[in-house]
Image (cartoon, rainbow, N blue to C red; front, top):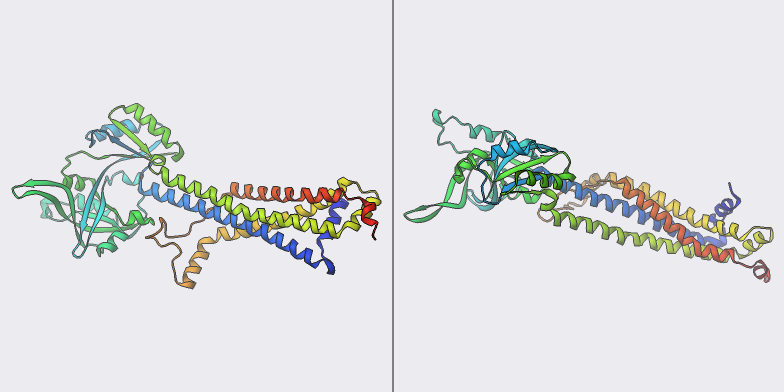
Length: 424
């Protein structure tokens, strides 16, 4: 062990007359601990939000949407065959998208009506957890035997849990779908309306989707909207979500006009850009805690240098170089910074990995919801530790701690032994 480091450890142990210096040292360690822990926890929450949000968005929505400029896509089977030949594509499915109104006995609500091809939709989409019924029940209503007296049986519909709550619906309840794409009658233009029955209620964990989406089978949707064999477009799943933009351009180049493709990053650009900006701003703001702790280290070292003037003078008289004196106080500041950083890293990781359970405990203890689903995009507090972020935080904290030692150490190294011992 270098003697400079040994002397640094001795200086960290407070004597009775140096208790105030020791308190400032403890405050410096605590400040770095809080700063590092806060950075790790907040960035873990931000990463969790981004990951959870992306997973939910890419569960309900596909990676790429392919449509026609001219409107509905009629030759979608042929297009699906061509699209599947593009490298990187895992699965495709046709879909229908339309605005509609849902009417129950006691309530009315706007909704987004989507037609699903039950044969291949679930290779592309994931609706989340079913609270009641089954999405596969749509296949039963789609293939009902009209010859057996079931021609008038209402088709099935699957809705989100919040939409079901708003309409007061439970499993097997009837609901009417009304669309503005109506028909002309002698009485004037009449919106098209048809009775459906609720065969499933899903919970995507995403309030916006749970309160607006309603799914019917592709065949029932085509019949209701009088589309024939046309669809709105194709939904496509790729093997690498971060290559979706390149694959979308390849599809457009292969198919040409009038087809256009839009990838998930483009459709949700503003949302994810806002999340990245928030993450950067939070990093900058919370880094100020570490900077404040670094000023505490500077204050501590200046006070130690003032207290140890006599010791420094004696060490120099015994042959210690200015470089060795500087090392002593650099070691002291770095030791304070390292202790605070390590404790902050361990505390931050421990809390970040158990944040979801801790948030549930707080909600139960105080009886309130931390993230109400009708206010925020998510209804749970997610957390995902990115160890690259942790490494940047730890290295940054240690660098700041080291830089904060340079001025006090330089002043200690320049001390004149004769001047320091003159009044002793």
